[in-house]
Image (cartoon, rainbow, N blue to C red):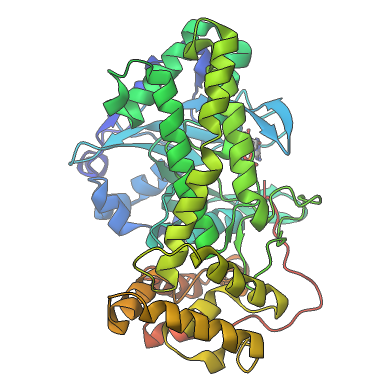
Length: 491
Ligand code: AMP
Ligand code: MG
């Protein structure tokens, strides 16, 4: 532990409530130091909101801390146990390359997990080396920060350090560690672990902890575990709708990668869709398209079913009745998702009120985008700024007919055109982290140690609804390529 001046001034205010759960939920660990930590990027606004002093973190001690070579006062480093269905198959997992160093209590009294990802082997590492490569850690940094700026609940990235060590993947790569900030790391898989290997008391302790941490208003509910499930459903319905609305494809929606807080977690092979196509899959390992764009709402429902299965012993003394109540509750998910999505789509089209035909209108546009291979984000931008000539749909009769229907629909609402335009501006991003731009930034960082390309990209992504002239560069599509874009887990 360090008591140096820089560390005292850094503003750490850590608690370790997770360590007060039954012992089987985690393993406390010694540090696993790396050779030569170097700070690559620090998220200063995030540091400030956590009550941390960025100057104190930009010191040698700061880099040592983000590398897991030292720990701040009050830290009790631990790896969490969890299980999960990976591509439908149940496995024991756990933090195989991550360390929770504690929960930072912010000046406003909020609580955030501070986790080092890539911090070395743990009892849950199985065959892995516990380490992470620079490219995937910067990728998570970029995309999670872009998601945050888009207004989508997500874990965030506080810092990335290089370790001065080389790690072996398909090729030798520079090692790195990312500091992840999360509402918590409670996952569907944490409950699966408790249900499979714990006692009912363990399960109840976990459920009570989750309620206390994320849904304290439910504590006095008559059946608080059912209320917990209902709230988790609501948050997932809202989250997945937001993903769909911006064209985000998570890529690996295993149950261990679904956070109960309702945040997006675990940025592996994720990517944003360019051309609108519900079958879009980027991940090299998703050969069946299980986690394709259009399948994400179904998979969220599937994961929620796995979640409620774990809660059955807590829902009712009579297990048949527990199953009945679980089924009834989960059947709300599709409608809840759909209504979140519809609200978001209405916003994207500048609609303030509701009409029964809206769904047909929206689906009509999506069908045209799919048929003519239109870029999803840029089509909505073209509609927002009435620059129809910017889309490949321009000049197509079907599109003109659709456009007339839409204009007539806009004219039937009270709000003036200017208000619709404003709503659309704020609902249709100018920039998303397009794959070729992300790759360009990572290549400069990995090959040349040049982080400026990434800094400029992060800057453009930090205010996606600004529609500023500087952002235009980031709206262009990649050059046509013979091969489809592929992402890798990078583990
Ligand atoms: P993910 O695909 O990141 O959700 O990881 C799935 C599981 O594999 C988790 O239990 C991770 O901790 C573990 N894992 C991923 N990469 C490594 C690694 N390099 N070393 C050890 N465990 C890993
Ligand atoms: Mg994971």
